[in-house]
Length: 178
Image (cartoon, rainbow, N blue to C red; front, side, top):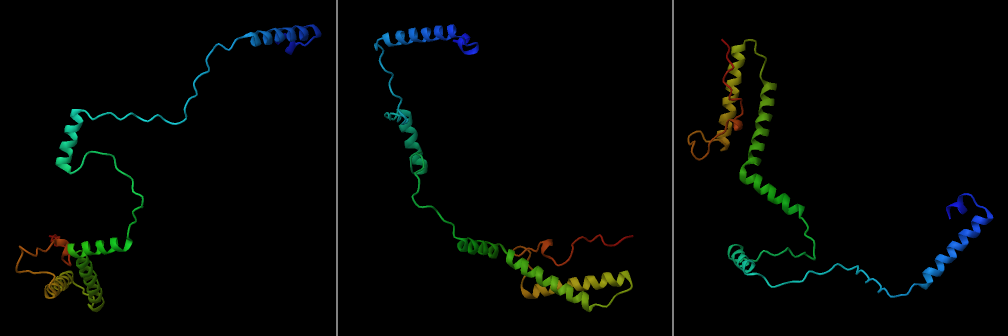
């Protein structure tokens, strides 16, 4: 066959046809004694379920006793769960209100507004000691205003403790050099 295909001559082509004819007669003379192969099923095989062993039954019973149901796979839901943005917003607002975050934010905003007003009203001071004194007086006034609004109780530290972060000034007292 190779000789006939790569270097075709009349003699080589006749020899190749004779070889093919002999092979065809041999294939036709074969008997169908072989059984055809079984067709492969495209469906996956199902696992055979067997009875639960004693250990599995005990484990399931203990699981039900501790958690209320057996350790079984999760069944799918036919309806998808949807999140309610409005309910989540309300819940977040309730958490902020109960933790005091909303009140702290309002308090800080009012203190900043007051500080801006006071800076605009206060005349420039030339002496550094006078500036420190004016700053301290402004901080004391802001603290007294917070106490008057009921946000800070200076008499009872057990129930309503005041954090340094809630105070309207920096608690770092190392301002004085010397």
